[in-house]
Image (cartoon, rainbow, N blue to C red; front, side):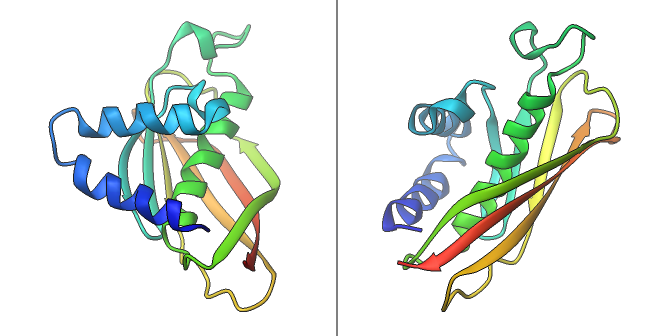
Length: 155
């Protein structure tokens, strides 16, 4: 991870308490990470090893079964895990997702919340680190479980 990721976390710390700050932060996130921005995520919580991101159900991310598209769920999960893990890494560590697996457990409809809680490792040599993410619907049911494998190494 670069120093810019730590500036990103510092920006979150400053803005999320201000009215509209989490929304503005999420908009900037969508500009900086254009593909992830396509699902219009809203960051609700961000700290080292923890991220909580919500997603509104809207027509643009629905499939032919009238539920949220599988890849929108994968996108939400990968973003949430990425925020949690990178927020907890040393500035001297860089990482990239090398594998993404998703178990789809229930049709996703309505507002969703992705949650990641992990313990980013101390990285002294290249390693693979699996980051678990759960996506829940408004009733609290898990609709998908995502595992993002990160390849981490000292820069």
